[in-house]
Amino acid sequence: MEKERRVGTISRGIRCPIIREGDDLAAIVADSVLQAAEAEGFALRDRDVISITESIVARAQGNYASVDAIATDVRAKFGGGTVGVIFPILSRNRFAICLRGIAKGAKKIVLMLSYPSDEVGNELISIDKIDEAGVNPYSDILSLEKYRELFGVNKHEFTGVDYVEYYGDLIRECGAEVEIVFANQAKTILNYTDCVLNCDIHTRARTKRILKAAGAKVVLGLDDILTAPVMGSGCNEKYGLLGSNKSTEDTVKLFPRECKQLVLDVQARILKATGKHVEVMVYGDGAFKDPQGKIWELADPIVSPAFTDGLIGTPNELKLKYLADNDFKDLSGEALKQAISKSIKEKEGSLVGNMASQGTTPRQLTDLIGSLCDLTSGSGDKGTPVVLVQGYFDNYTNM
Image 1 (spheres, rainbow, N blue to C red):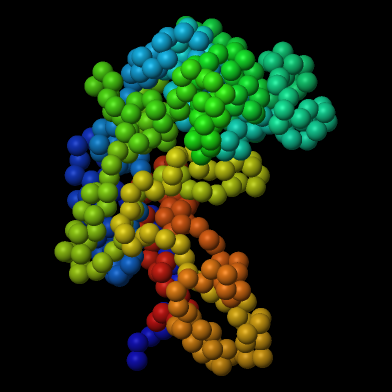
Image 2 (tube, helix red, strand yellow; image 1 turned 90 degrees about the vertical axis):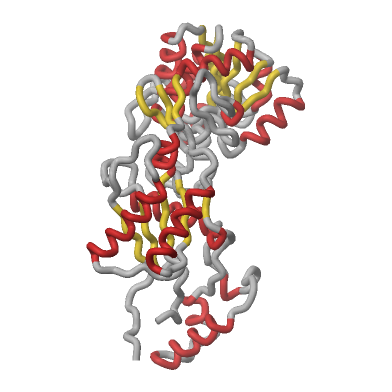
């Protein structure tokens, strides 16, 4: 009789060589997973998930762009005059380097910041201070002077940066004039200029729609900048500057370009080497919120830009504690185990609306697994840009 398995999902960071432009990434990823399995004494199984962080995909693709390339594209698309830059996130890594390029491509920047926080939760000021000041963030427009009068200097809890001062100084250093306002209604920017670059990530389509309806002359998002190579730069046809990170003081690493073939290649290599059918995905930021800093992690446009077809969809799970506390509340021990196992084996089709699935997480598989992988690999010096997730699709009945 086969021994009962005593563990469920396992997430392993897989160490890899440092990836450089032009490397055969599919071969490196497959070999690294196979070598880790041999070294650590575990076996690959069908439906294991191999996840590859987007940064090494973009690096292997050589998908970089200079600040000057950004400036050239911005100048070509906006005309080099006054540009309204609205709703950027507060990030040295994610946005400041892009802002340098934007400022170098314009004569004046009207920087409109959302408040009390940016789209992903970085606070300019606390909501409590907003309440104390009697300000209505939905409707009230604050000048820089009014903001300072009401709230003074507010440094980011984790970085210690006053982003209002930092972004203003950065724009001036790049040779552009700057005016800073605080507002949450997109069309407010049209009081200052009719050429607008909206820098929000997940609400960008709505922002563009509102601005165009209100009569803006030029409306583009970060996803419209560097959608094609400029001066030999990298690009991203679908997401432009969205998902980019600072690489050096003068360059950004862009979000990976089309990489479906990469995940299929890794899948095929593992099948050939082991006979096992694994799933493969590329992941960026996870999608979760930090309760202390109130920051929602997802600054990328999506969690996963490419994945094999077995990762399409959402979990279809029963809530064990609901079954234990309701349907089988009079059972215990082996009888309870057998009853719950039978329910799991007999579940059919979608469980949407079924009380026994209430409380399970209705999110895309790639968002859930990508978040797990982002937490496993971290963003620092762990050196594990590939994550192997095993047992994710197991349930209570799997031996």
